[in-house]
Length: 437
Ligand code: UGA
Image 1 (cartoon, rainbow, N blue to C red):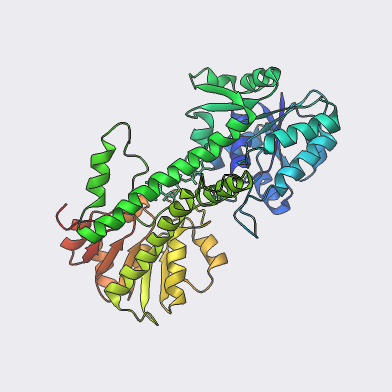
Image 2: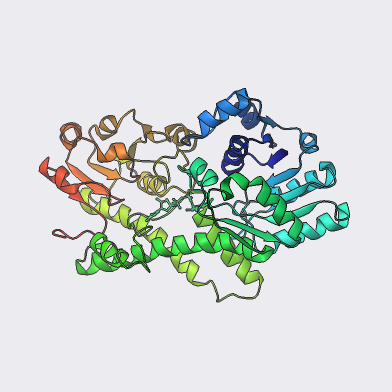
């Protein structure tokens, strides 16, 4: 079986090497020449544990290859659509132009009898529209199912090969059987398969991300209350998390969520509901977004509380730039949004991140890039811990304190052992933490 993967961003590149790992021959197609050349050299354009080794192994075994020539998808039996659907430049809705371009290539090149598997996150109704177009323009000789992807950055390979569930939206039973055949090794490991219609499959993805975003903003709203009354949000999360109906995961309060998925997905979902005439249905997601942004402003306010309103010329050490640990992705990163707000007020930002500094250099040229946490802390008036990498948990506070102008740290992720920092003479504060929780 030959598989084509259309779009080799995060999702597509990982999917391509994972399909090769399952034993298939895979051709990855993308219009970005630089990216394709990078993959073909065996290099990963992003940091993702396990991805690089799978890429190297399957390039060597010739199971996977990458191309910018769309005609090379012609012999594939299955076409996975994995292109991005970023937020549109002129509103909240998703930009689906890359989905449409993928379909054009499939209509032009795909062989009769092949079938399409949509994996991208799309506005509900997209899959049916694509299916109808395929029916009209290729006379029903190419099938289509929708199979959303739930991988998390940092765990992308494992999430692809060992997913919690496989969701398949379909119109034609025969295509479901074919996709199950592709995923046979994963299904045989006992992975639940949920088969439903096209619309539900599309909705499962955005509903899951909206729920996760809601969970994070819920606990961050509780953080706001705790801050007002002297409560401790970590103890609160622990206590409600023991209720198995609630669960402790995704109840970490701090500076909120970012990344290339949750923020744009909750906005696109609202935009789609509005198009459907359901303006009020998802209006709560606007509040979810607002709570999330208020956490970034809260961190700026805390910084000013400690080192003064006037930030002009003041050195601030920022630990963390990626939107979350084990990633070099800086899209909508809360850490960088906060650093930018502080820089706009005149602060000098000295920043360190174990993986994301190359991306920071490109997009935030005015920030001082440090080679270690200690170097970033040199002469700083305050340390802001904004992405919870393990190596920041392991820092020696005494070493950091020695080089700083004043020993103050704010833990924006509630991930550090603040007592350890206090023992080294720091004024240390978390987000919505009570003194004696
Ligand atoms: C998210 C979903 O978790 C995946 O299931 C989904 O497939 C993916 O989006 C996608 O749509 O492609 P990801 O963006 O990799 O995955 O990141 P998450 O682990 O969900 O974290 C998102 C943000 O929430 C991060 O900024 C993280 O720091 C923040 N977060 C997470 C919190 O602030 N608190 C928490 O308790 C958990």
